[in-house]
Each structure stands twice: as structure tokens, then as C-alpha cells.
Image (cartoon, rainbow, N blue to C red; front, side, top):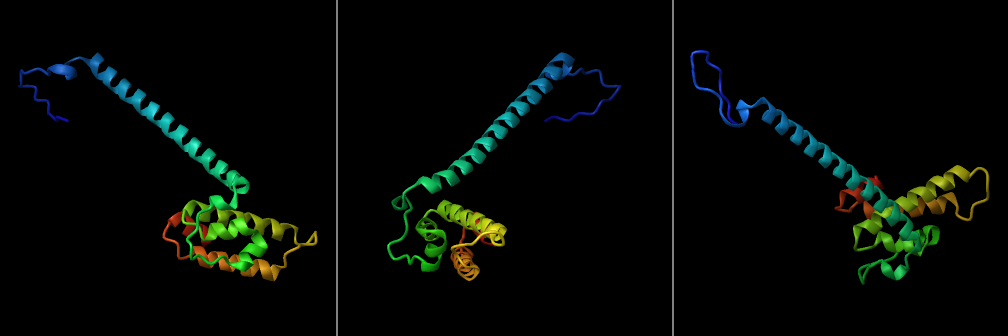
Length: 154
């Protein structure tokens, strides 16, 4: 970008795009149109990512246990498996961090629902078992290097 100062004694004139005010206005309007188009594309991508996250959460419930890849020497916590199910227990040991994130969200929602209806209905899980399973799940994920999983465990 060139910067110049106007000197009334200077007889040189501005040449090129700067000489025609219509061309300058066209450049600014094109830039504004391009920026608004980019904003629309960013909104579309953000909306698609939100939809993908919702689909991943729903797909987690319908996927098979064999779809969650874990290391061969991974120890599945019996308390997590007892309270939240085998799929969530596998997700806590998954190689892919997305499964850990989804597993923590499942635990969060389960615990929230348990605490909401604890006073009104008879539960199959005791609060002691639930607390131990939650603590065990957090112990798996609080040492996670992926910030999304770590933040959920907090």
C-alpha cells in the first residue's frame, strides 16, 4: 500500500486506480462482498461442525463395541463398565480422543439425569458406585494431552 501526502504546489496528478473515484468504490465494494461471502462460508462450516458433533454423539450409542479401538494392554475399569456400560468403559481407554470426549459427555449426562431423578425414583445404581465410577473416569482423562478431553474432565 502506497502512502502519499498532498502538496498543493505539486502539479503531478494521481494516476491509475486512485485517479478514478468509481474504480476505488468498485474495489471497496468487491472487498466487502468477498468478506461477506467468506463470513457465510465460515458460518456454514461452523454449523456443519456442530451437526457433526451431534451426529457423533448419536452414532456413539449405535456403534458396536468393536468399532472403538483400544490398546491391547488397556485395562477396562470394572466400576465404569458396571455403572455406565462397556462402551463407555472402552471409550475411556480408546486410542482416538474423540471417543474419550464422547464418553465423558455420556457420563456427564447420565450423572446429571441420575441426580435429577434421584429423589423421585428408585435407581439401580447407588450414589457411592456412581461417585466411584465418575472419579475413575476423570482419573483416566485428567492426564489426557488433548485439551478438549482434559477440559471436559475438569
